[in-house]
Length: 178
Image (cartoon, rainbow, N blue to C red; front, side, top):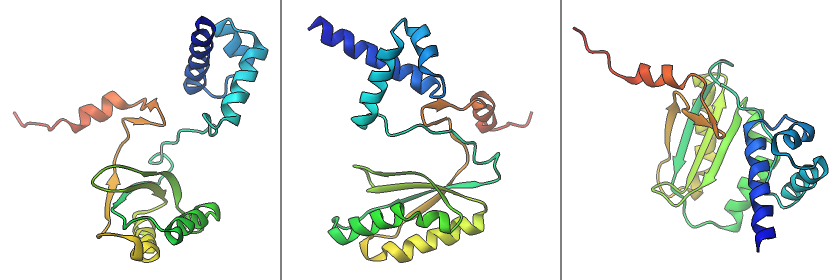
């Protein structure tokens, strides 16, 4: 039992370091954790093969890249094979990119809305056009009219604290004239 607990603890430690900085190599992580490089490599490989790790990504500030971010929320009719195939086809053929849109997150939730889609576009006009494309493509699968919102700022994105969090939070406080 101890060995299994120890292995889990080491795996969590590795994940912590990968989340902190996925670009650091096995040598650096081995140094920090005092684990063998080969152990780090094998654990990481196992996590990737098990799909506990899907991949590694760069956290972008879409605003600094002159892009706008939108959140689309909708309630669906019960999932059908046709609906599942449509979603799969559109995502695996990179349909959003053909419209200048970058898909940031899509999730299925137990919530007021079933599907949440976060995407960025080079302008409000393109973001709204893409919203209309999604409405047309998925119209038969919506239970009601989708809701679209613009995202102004992230406090946390991909597990990373926004480096400008303090300034963003302070800017949200209403200024009361004296």
